[in-house]
Length: 201
Image 1 (tube, one colour):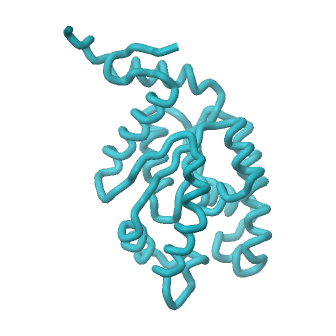
Image 2 (cartoon, rainbow, N blue to C red):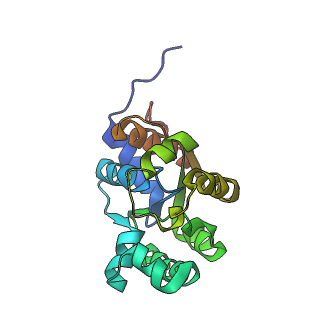
């Protein structure tokens, strides 16, 4: 039996966008997983606006995330983060990258479920350590043993991230490769057959 010829990507993307409707594609995962970098690529592939929740928070507060943590503490920061994400989610479709702790809030998860499709970029610890060690702007990693902090966050958060609609393993590969895998995973989630152009109803 011959396979159907593959559809051009734009037809699969159009079908995916049709299924997405007004919902947002929301990236979740630990710091260093690549949510912003991959999110930007996915937004470009699908022709959607891209929003980074940390940048939105910094814009509305006129303070950096590390400054907010230092001045108000994590609890106040999470409350602000939740308000910003809930507001952003009202204006889909778009691609939204969230901070590592955002999905831990039950109310935020509920809002994402109601207004979006969540994508967990799942990363191994060595990849995360390699990436976060290059940046000094991670408030949760101001510790004598950052690896232990990452291990604790993985233990706490990975079971919650696993509730995301789609899980895509990420690794040290080109952003375009991971972004294409995310789009294919979303096609699978919505029943859009990226390879053949068939749509399962």
